[in-house]
Length: 273
Image 1 (cartoon, rainbow, N blue to C red):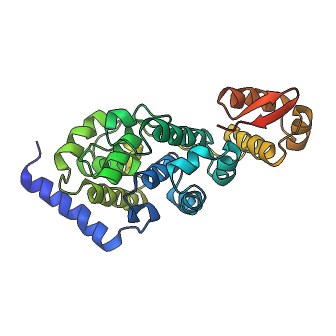
Image 2 (spheres, rainbow, N blue to C red):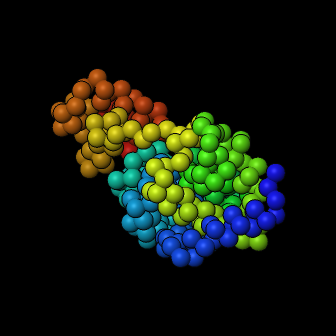
Image 3 (spheres, rainbow, N blue to C red):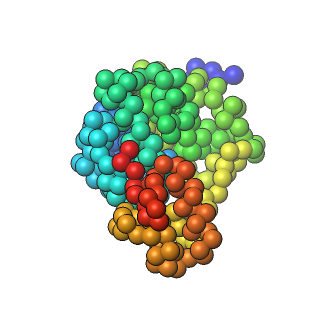
């Protein structure tokens, strides 16, 4: 059981670090739900440093739900290029279409409704609630997880989020959850650098696979080639990529299933939606 004194001490420690060393990030300067959505989808499985430039570029090109909903998919993928996990770009465009058509252009503030949108899981829905709407929800991502493992589970391994969740709720600054979670994440970033990443003790920890030579890299190369050469044939694509033909064809089948393009004879056409 956490005493009020221990909760206060914990909060003061986290806020003290944040007040001295908090990061200045572009999506922290706004409460616009669309901007928050874009940043949170980009931050899924991608480091902050890589997201900053792309986030600002994306917002300039597609400043609201309506313009993103109307944009051809190939334009969205062009701006997204370099972030990887291109399914997120497709999901983001689909969300824009749903919000525009179903919610009259207004992002829903309800956690359960957010969970029904493409590409939005538990953590992303909670992040949107906290950062766009300042709602006191339980939000756990890798840096938040790091803080609680370091402070409350130092002598344990295989710590589950179900163990952490009650502590996140108990220690939550309900008067300002937005700022509290920003502070927690920045404190977690520091802990990862100072203590060899305490989140490795999490039962949910997964080591990031190398991008070079990976299937993720091949998928990105295929999409880049299709965007730059919209009428290229499959045989020419295989030659230009100079990768294992069987693997290229397998990925083409998967990318088509995921809605990135359609086949017209032996050509590929990037989908408009």
